[in-house]
Amino acid sequence: MTTQWQLDQLRDGVKINHPSRAKELISLINSLARSREIFDYHKCLARDAFEAFNVTNDPDGMSFANRIFGIEDDDGVLWQAGIVSEANFIACTTITRSSFDSFGQLVNQLMLTKPCKANPYVQEVAKALSHGELKEELSAAISSEWFAYIQAFSNTVKHRQLITHNPSLSFIDENRGGKVEGFDYKGHYHPACWVMEALEGTVQLQNSLVACGKALNRAYLCAIN
Image 1 (spheres, one colour):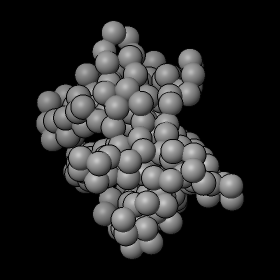
Image 2 (spheres, rainbow, N blue to C red):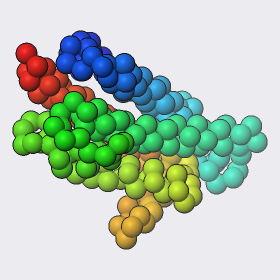
Image 3 (cartoon, one colour):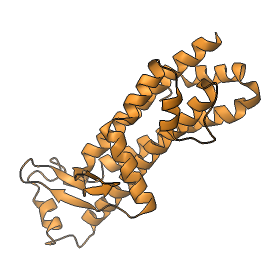
Image 4 (cartoon, rainbow, N blue to C red):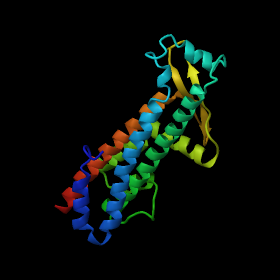
């Protein structure tokens, strides 16, 4: 994130324009950078969870299939892969969703003449922004299908129950790995999807967040120069 979104420039601008609140605001900026690093860590673990059963290590998928159907797995390799996949995917969705709210809090303090209430949701901040590049980038990100998915997923996991996550094998498209069961959230059904597919969705959202950060820099730093 730091190489794409120039956080040092934003920190310097905050020190000049908001000296009395610089410590608080810079802490929020640092938190966003750290969250991206933690996301990348969990993303790699989730991505590689079923590496023992990929096409290189298990070309015909027979070892994976035998373990799924209970023929073997006395050593617990498949069970462990499932836990690693699920735990790190949950972390990726949770971190991504919370990062958007952290970004919203930063924008709330830097860009709104009349800030929203303390700790607003990112949707409230996006709605309150004046028309421009930042509003467009942020509104596009939080209105995307993947944002709706991770919001529904993280809220369900946090407030209700874990969503079923199983090792799966498709004989149609030859997919193999973790699969998240479909679930309903507030009357909207989110169909089952492969973890790798949903993981790519979180990466897209993280990239959108960087684009929003760049737009914030342009808007904020231009305003104080």
